[in-house]
Amino acid sequence: MALTPTERSLRARAAAYAKHAAHDPRPTTEKASRAHRESFLKKVDPEGLLPEVERHRRAEMAFRSHMASLAYQSAKARRKRAGGDAA
Image 1 (cartoon, rainbow, N blue to C red):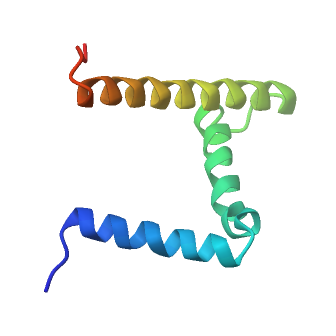
Image 2 (image 1 turned 180 degrees about the vertical axis):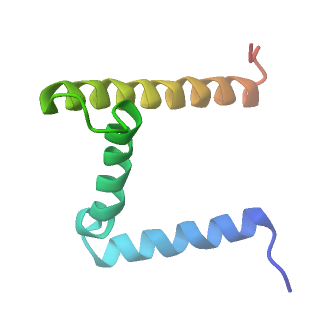
């Protein structure tokens, strides 16, 4: 029997919780976290021409912008689910 997308998501969430209950999640997710942060370095300076300090400053701002955008989208979705205006 095939699982629905919701069932797959719930099963995966339960597995992730079980994994993190047995292991410290920081080493488990370190490689992915580093790659995610490095993607912002590549985004702001794909050719690596900027001085290192400026490159990291811009990457940090790009990361913050990304996170703020996610927070905005999340708030909008919560408002929509609550029956408010989602404009």
